[in-house]
Length: 255
Ligand SMILES: [Mn+2]
Image (cartoon, rainbow, N blue to C red; front, side):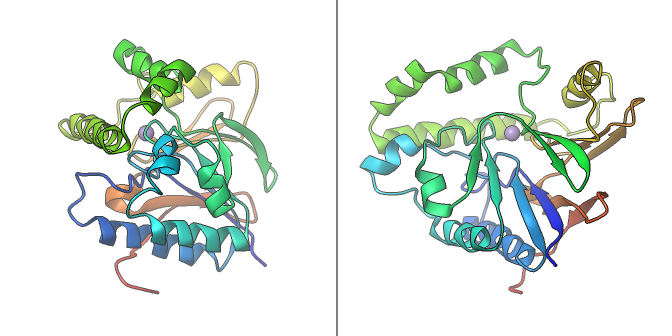
């Protein structure tokens, strides 16, 4: 009986900071293949791709180098529903990815009850940020006019700009140690605490932070931040009893 619900985020496929992109992609593929055995649903919570821009895929064929992972996603959607949340790196999907893979695309947080637990699911960027530069860029990337203008850029240049931006953004984060800042400073926890004042959830599940967090609030809401699939192959699951656990796989070898 397939009764596991999997959550995975931040694989950053295609990142220029990854030494061996094909090996990196294969790790995710093996993880997705392992889920076929018992997955009831799979939630991909953002930044699966380091940069994703479907404006170009119509004009310049298809995204380069992702055939294998798209195939693995197609195989998984044949087994169970797969949900793809846009992150802050892979915002620009307009139907192509859904059509290629059968995944359900989410551009907004999702309120869903899973195995009896009410869950708030989102990538987790821009929730309670005070970083004005980040919020400006986020608003720009989500803006239809800016998207229209970017569409006019030749595909090769657009992809170059996109991957360079993604690289510098990740490099900036990697330059400082990624440490837990405490529940009064982590914006996903701040957001959940605020949200609990009006609506109670059993689980808030986010990605984005590349750091595992598991914080129980006074309202008994559990704030879960998935770790990082990119460097550590961390992900998570809710079992048939509604328990969440963090998982870490070794996907170096074929199954
Ligand atoms: Mn992110």
